[in-house]
Image (tube, rainbow, N blue to C red):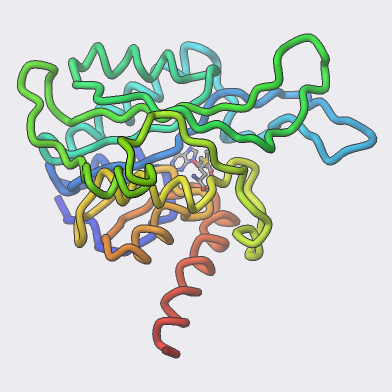
Length: 256
Ligand SMILES: C[S@@+](CC[C@H](N)C(=O)[O-])C[C@H]1O[C@@H](n2cnc3c(N)ncnc32)[C@H](O)[C@@H]1O
């Protein structure tokens, strides 16, 4: 088995790639998988830019989604060191399945973090509440009985909470346009959200895996914060956007 290359963005299927890497290759994993929320026929609103997701990579049968999700979470758990942190993004569409799989693997769940988006797009059907949250499950890569000494940078978290213990409900606006200048992705996460996770749940120089990189937000922020990373993304269009985002801070660092 070959070691994954540090600070490398791999283009390909994450399951195939991860299966070729040795156990305990990473300190942590932070990842934002397909949510299985896309519609084959999207809804649009003539007077706004509101759209529902219609991404091929996000469309599964219910059984197919469970099987795929269980398979990649098992691989992540094999690849992350014992007691390393795993942060997995989700919404009501998939977070219960993810939680169920983590329970079945007997992994210790540390917290579930609510990301509240004050500027979430309105609900166009008028039949439900306006969905304006996503969840992030924070799990320690060990069993509920044995989990210990996971990274939690308490004082950094307190600083982020303006001197108070940081709560698990974070109000952060949806990804700003300035972070999308190299191209768009319908599920791109704001850098501010990744900054919090990385500062709280990893240490400098730690190696972080993101197996569903999209536009590479995890690697961009990890590099800025002095962490190392490995990312995988299947779609070449998103790989290109991610490459450009990653190169940008490296170039500016050289200029300074
Ligand atoms: C929710 S998005 C991640 C967005 C990312 N957090 C960002 O900030 O840009 C999930 C990504 O996983 C990719 N993907 C889906 N299935 C994959 C697979 N089997 N292997 C690698 N990437 C995959 C999709 O192309 C998509 O870009």
